[in-house]
Amino acid sequence: MKDKRTKSQSWKDLKNVDDSKKKRPISGRARWKFVGKIFNKFLIFLFIFVIAGVLYFAYNSGFVGDILSPKTDRVKFFDYSTNGCISKDWAYKYIDYPKSESLSKIDIFFIKKILEDIGQIRYAEVKKVYPNTLKVEILEHEPMARISTKINSQIETFIMSTEGKFFKPVCIPDDQINTLPYIGGIKMVFANGLPMDYPMASRVKEFLNAANEKYQKIAASWNIIDLSELSRLTVPVITVTTKDNLKIIFAAKDYEKQLERLDYILKYEKENPQHTFLQIDLSLKNRADVKVK
Image 1 (tube, helix red, strand yellow):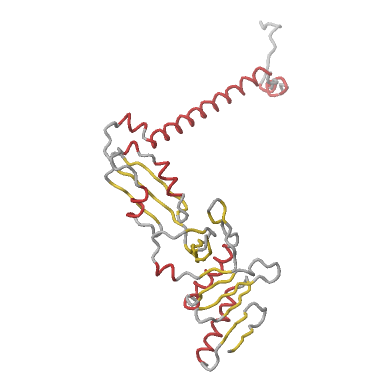
Image 2 (spheres, helix red, strand yellow):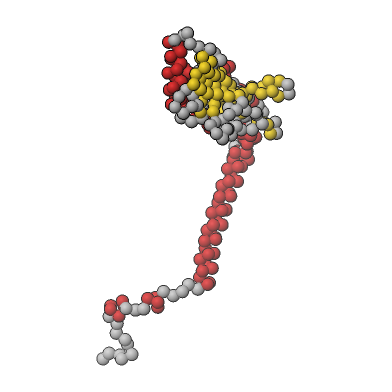
């Protein structure tokens, strides 16, 4: 005999149950509990991150080395690499760390700073390799041109990098420096005794790259690159003076087309030695103007 108080339910009855009865609103307490769990996880992550940072600093500064390896050898090996010209011997002498000091007590952060204070160096990485090796890797700026300026009644020469940095050359051979064209027509600005970057270096790099890609022989004859009119609002130009005192005027665009035209004109001059050119103006849209000596 069935109990009348018991309500029989089929699967259809269960399916038709009001969904609103299943989904109850989350209480404020439950929300705070959930937020609390997230916050606790964040604190744990932050704590691990801070501890890892402290351990990394302590390891590189030598504190951990003093504890784990109090009898660390003095630096016996200097592992050095660079993408440029600064030699291992020069860097070794410049760093001048105490040769009687154990590796664990070497201040690599100080070494990194004094290296990066050298204008030619873009980035330096200094590491300790226990038990007795100091590892130094540097990334140097790429030389693009040179510029001379008067400082305290003396003429000083700086190298300009492809990023517009000015620096005094270190270990760069004279014959390599002599292949760099001179930059003219700009005024070097100094701040705290250091030359400020040239803001339009990327345009000069584009110009020189276009020339060196297909017309290296022509570019090798360039002596001075005048940038005084590169910042003009209307028809900015770059004026080149060759080692033979030929003046060539380029519009600051479409370099490949202008260089192709220049190559044709110079070949014509070579084949017709009775014509000596004083100036070639390539900045005009559909033609080149030539002044003959």
